Length: 144
Length: 109
Image (cartoon, chains in turn brown, red):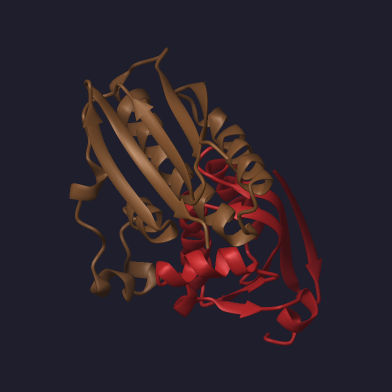
């Protein structure tokens, strides 16, 4: 089997999150990935897509922004790539919540900051590349 | 996304159905907090929730705070393995009482 690449374009709106998750689930199912692998991949992509939409577009006042999602099906890997032309932002560089924070009682916790950590922990590999002026957030799931 | 609220044995039972992502979270949160009002004992039935992102965890956090501030108690029922995983990664799991079913959740009050 050769590799397949499916490309989709979305408006930078939170409305699209469900469709993103559905597309990933469908392709993952078709190619024999487990329910848990697929769920975790949709979770990781959802978290980062949310950040792109909110911080890259909505908070910047960009109303008609779009971004792309590529689903790449290789022999031993499923790769999702989010490609956006918003302000350069490398999530890998961000400080993750400390162990101390994660043990802080919920009454005293700051709100937010968990998305990137969840994304990193939910896939086999989470990478960022800046290519031809665009942010590429890359999520890799290895076939077990 | 749908929310149903009922009172069983003086405990407010909130049944949530669908996905709690960053699009739906604010509506879910608003509806739940409105329904809590004077109730201090709450069961949240998550058995029909198929997806929870960090935005959904924030909703759980706000409900927890609202109830805790009144010395009440919140129990989560029917939490899927996937949702349990994300609650573990983020440390949320340590602060909630979790029950397999609504029936067993009632016994925790």
